[in-house]
Length: 305
Image 1 (cartoon, rainbow, N blue to C red):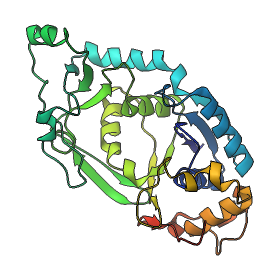
Image 2 (image 1 turned 180 degrees about the vertical axis):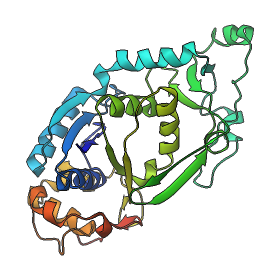
Image 3 (image 1 turned 180 degrees about the horizontal axis):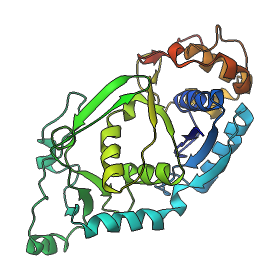
Image 4 (image 1 turned 135 degrees about the horizontal axis):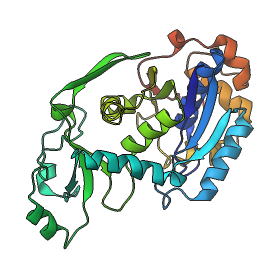
């Protein structure tokens, strides 16, 4: 059976971009008669207090979404992440890294066209003595050694995508220096453990997929059968939406619009609904078709919300 998921991070009230992704992910699975899993990605509990998770569930329910399994909380799954991390460490695939974002050597590292830096392997070959000396002043993160190899896939919406991990991302972090598990590790373990077969998420995560496919491979886990990456909603002035855009968050929107009005406007932006009239998520199931979803990022009309 098709199993999809919605996996928000409760660092604040959801904004329109979060809801846009939720709507499309939910409709895609429901159209196929599949199961929906709700996962709360609260790895950073300092930024994601429990009350935000409670609010998120209330918001989704009020907007007309349901799910068949969950909610699961990443903050409660650390033992599983640590077990998998140790299995990689035992095989010599990880190494401690003492670099910081402010490190001038990282700033001068090669950069991709999207601005993301490619880690140049500064700490990859430290000797045991060097590691011990550096640990006296700083706790390290843990990076995984990436191969000089291409990992590719065909996205169900965006088409073919490939990266050579060594050249395009470099060795990436699986556990931060503050002890928090990295998104790339947690999402791979969770999707495999929850038998997720379909992943729908924003196009900003397209470049994460080759790294995740690599992790599925080295962890001997089954990856999802399908990935769909959808366009991002941008503010009227072209900025990417974030939880700092309070006027486009649920805390502000609920003061002006009913749940069906919000869903109707989002469905209109997605090309699923012919106009912005009020509608419930379940009403949209018969109308859903991936061919209707735009591939380019969507600028919110100034007069829509």
